Image (cartoon, rainbow, N blue to C red):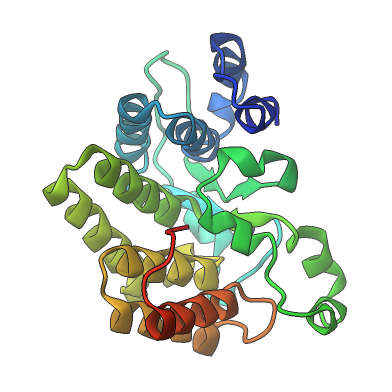
Length: 249
Ligand SMILES: [Zn+2]
């Protein structure tokens, strides 16, 4: 939140704020590091963001279990998955938890998130959709929440795009698509609609509007038609196609 305030006031995010992340890094293998990478990206420290993302990718091996505090998925077999975990060791030599929480951004952090998450913080098209939210959904739908792994590849895509490293950018997009569309990863994906929205947005940035439209509609078809930011993306995409290019978000 302090980083967001700094960026809102167009100040530089200082070392003191960044250093505070060291207290949260051992929480899991990815979520705090991804939040740090997002802050570095939004602050313009692109090379530093790449380094943090490399570190997350190295830690996020195939046995890491995704954990969500707000959603359950029918196929979830927590006990079996936790039993199957390998003991891990961090660079400091202590056991590191082999799970990854979702990454959550509250509205007070909006200046240190990629802009697409502003749509996730405002999922409803009108007030009637808010009334249809369950008690649990009301707890988190005003935040942006995304599974760690898709967010890792999305951030990699953005950073390599900013650096002009085209082949790495395309590889990140392939990894993102593979992770979301391969059924074997179904058990580790809690916010499927948001993951599809990230994928659709990457396709938009590639100028592949038909594919973008396909992934947004998949988001709506497979997950939820209401309270889904995909509705905003479809509207903006149609507007873009009718009116021509407008500023990138
Ligand atoms: Zn979650």
